[in-house]
Image (cartoon, rainbow, N blue to C red; front, side, top):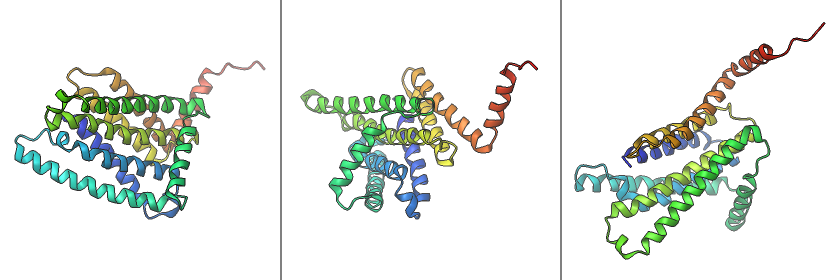
Length: 256
């Protein structure tokens, strides 16, 4: 893949950090599932990405520049890890860390169930696809590390695997948040509109960054672009007008 894949992942991370920064000073927002989920996703992106630094600077033209970029990005990830850990402690609902982790795991597993199929099933299916991809990529990386021939490869080739895991971990937290918002019919909120378009842009960039254009990933992104567009129209108050007009147009006339 070309550098567009990595750039797209960092674009999502920047967008999520922007959303989190607006909620950080509000206690009622910091305690919400959305804040906690996105904060955890960013934490995982920073922590897992530490093993992917060589791959993240692969576009550099020489080794000195690559080393400087990798060092700067490592410092940035460490700072992000520090901030998100503080955010996790500030937003947790239980005094015990173990209780918080167990409650979070139970909540996430139960959250995979779809209560409102029309609004949320698309997001749940997309989430399952991303989770399967993430665990498959991670398992492949572990398997490769047990291969002596693989360990003879460059740091770039080895770390590239874990770079993908870090991005998919963050993306899964975003899609999970969208699925939960869809259940509550909250997709017209600004942050959810932004998140839909973030996933759409990420998928488009990844799709065209492959050696052979991946139309499957582009279609995956198109689904989120449509959701984001509908959320924007709903926020502006125009979606209901269009739906009402469509209903009247196709409604059969009643006899007097």
